[in-house]
Length: 281
Image 1 (cartoon, one colour):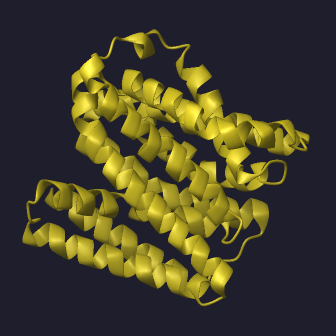
Image 2 (cartoon, one colour; image 1 turned 135 degrees about the horizontal axis):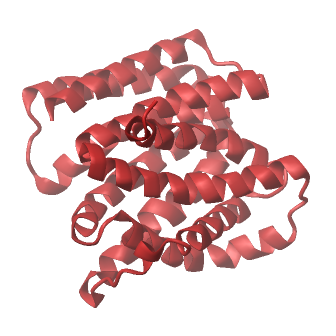
Image 3 (tube, one colour; image 1 turned 30 degrees about the vertical axis):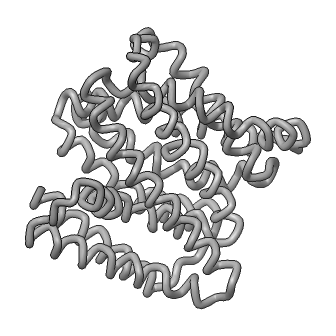
């Protein structure tokens, strides 16, 4: 495998594994502490890249602030709370709907109706996401809340990606992400630091958290930026199709999680819709 294809698939593999790391990290630390710790480790990792310190105009800092809220602080706090209620495998599978929500939000913000082909892809994908969530949502209020938290995080990501597009075109991904993470550290610190102090670390949760911060919150974003430069943004974004597959495999194989057949069918339909939509953009 040449280095170009490695750039293409590596972010999806890392982000797919992130849901396993979250589940393992929750054995030692609460969701607020987990979110703060992973963002702080990601920020320190990105600081090692000289490109992170590229200047950003003061006029663009309000947008960077909202990225810190909507891309990092808010969704990265919701996901650990969700994984306390539903499996890491299902959380990762539902995150396969991320491109669908990003497209819906972008269309809503721009006021432009999507093409017929994109609409078909969205309809297929959202139907698959609903089917995927039905078994967990029917298990009780706790699981239903977990599903709602995941959906909320996906909407937040969708808004953040719409904000990030212009900034990344202007400055590149790494300087924008690094500064947004600085904002997120400040926002998550009040609840995160006390939880971090009271964490009960053992080797596997600690290593999982370090991997989540270094790779999932930092390196994957750097590689994704390089892949976008190498392949183009549209083709590079296809790495997200790996996320639900990797999350499912790791959850089942390493944590003995079970996923309902209906959820598996919904996941396949969701990916089909996302693929159809991507071909049409």
